[in-house]
Amino acid sequence: MADENTPGGEGDNQQTPSVATGSDNPSETDIKKAEEFKETANGFFKKEDYNQAITFYSEAINLNSTVAAYYGNRSFAYLRTECFGYALQDANKALQLDPKYIKAYYRRASANMALGKFKLALKDFEAVVKVRPNDKDAKAKYTECNKIVKMNAFAKAIAVDDSKSAADGLDVENMTIEDDYTGPRLENGKVTVEFVQNLQDTFRDQKKLHRKYAYQILLDVLELLKTQPSLVDINIPEGEHFTVCGDIHGQYYDLLNIFKINGQPSESNPYLFNGDFVDRGSFSVECIFTLFSLKLLYPNHFFMARGNHESFTMNQMYGFEGEVKQKYTSKMAALFTEVFNWLPLAHCINNKILVMHGGLFKDENVLLDDIRKYDRNRQPPEDGMMCDLLWSDPQPQCGRSQSKRGVGTQFGPDITKKFLQKNKLDYVIRSHEVKNDGYEIAHDGKCITVFSAPNYCDTMGNKGAYITLRGEDLTPKFTSFDAVPHPNVKPMQYASSLFGLF
Ligand SMILES: [Mn+2]
Image 1 (tube, protein in one colour):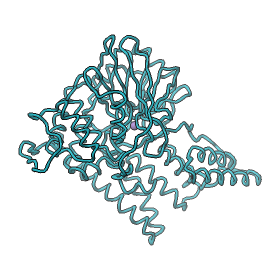
Image 2 (cartoon, protein in one colour):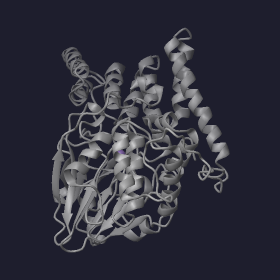
Image 3 (cartoon, protein in one colour):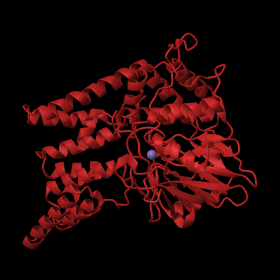
């Protein structure tokens, strides 16, 4: 995989781009007023109200665009709201105004790391270390980032041979099960209804699935996913229903709660989980094995789409890789990377509803068939169709604009309308952004967001939601739900230590 590859992060933010040209020749009054705005913004920042902070930093910049700190501070607020594209722009602007402004190097490095651009981040840490040779903190960050750059270069070097797999030499058959193991067991190597129930209870009680079965499930899912097209067609017959869930992000206890409210998955209670199963929440391993077991049990009634977090760079930064290494092995983490490469990119329900994690495309001309025949076995590229499917966001204004995240595109209601007409579809369901009620209807009802991780990261205070559809009319019905308690393991527990920067 490419090391300047892909990018990063979630989050909801309706900020419009920082086009604020500002005044580069402010009056005395404006200078004073701008300082006041900055103070107000700092106050909001301290209270963790980053959107308000951004609004007031922008006001300050409008009046006086010559102060590097205004851009530096706003960049920090953008980092907190995961608008890494905007954060990068502001850090660059701050450095233009004041090349000696150390904090801006940190901001830029943070944004680049979040976007998976570790080499660029390393340059900034290097710059800081040069200016402040005695700064221990700067030195530590430089060392940590350098480690990642070297590790990725190594991973790239050994990954040249595509025919090699983490599964090679894996002798699942001969892995022994210790006498004191009391967890669930596959029956003749197969997942059963009893296994899935037992697995859910085992994980709920914070016990582990034996690595022999964990590996077996991964190998079986890999084979199954390889048989699927990149765009999977789903048919909901008349009189039957179907549930679509959004991001889960390692919130295992909230996942169990969805099954409690809406019923266990089965052939008569089918589900689609629309990507971002892992990262951030510290029970990602539990989530993914539960979901993969269900996929094996109900291959034609349980569906999973790839999210931007089912990728190597994201997993390295946002905790999943660390969690798998902690709970199992690094070999298993590598196998996950291969399995995620085979997750379908989108689903189409009754030829009328297109469901993907991110959204629509930079390119006007994408047709369903282009998605269907797309060769998806790879890390998400930095642009193009696959990137947009995993990363894009809708915007209220018409047309397209640069992504606040720095990856994918933002698409307006006119873009959605044209795409639906061209492909004879009714509407789009996507996930990828936190919403207060767990869902949001945009673009005249043609673009629906669903997000199923309530109180995201234990901090956002949002509800989760899922959508139920009936075969006869396909009108979406929304159910919102609150977060449930989880054991005392904080989100991001296993994430990169560089996250101290954000
Ligand atoms: Mn996402």
